Image 1 (cartoon, rainbow, N blue to C red):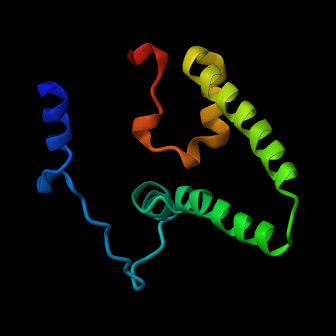
Image 2 (image 1 turned 120 degrees about the vertical axis):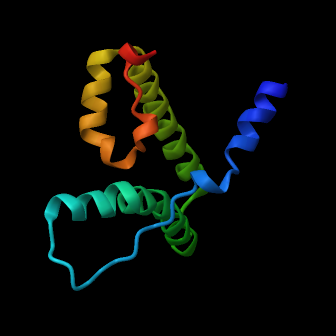
Length: 117
C-alpha cells in the first residue's frame, strides 16, 4: 500500500510536468520537428481520436438511431479492440504490426516491447 501511495505522489511532482512548447509561426518549418511537435508533444492525433466518439454519440442521438443497434456495434467493437490489444501484449509479431498501424495514437510509454519486460 505504501509503495502504491509513493507511486501516486510521484505523479504530482511539479518538476515532472513539461509544458506544451509555444508555437512559433515565424520559425522555419522542419517536417521532422513539426511532426514531433504535433504528434509527440501535443498528441494531436490522439486527442482527435479520443474526441471523435463524443461527436459520433451526438450525431447518433440527433438521428434517433435505434439503441439496440448501437449496443450491438459497440459490443462487436469491444471484442475486436480487446482481442487486438491482448494479441499486441502477447505476440511480438502482432505488436510490431499493431504499432506500425496504430502507433501514432499511442504514447511512447504504451509501446512496451516484450523484450523489455
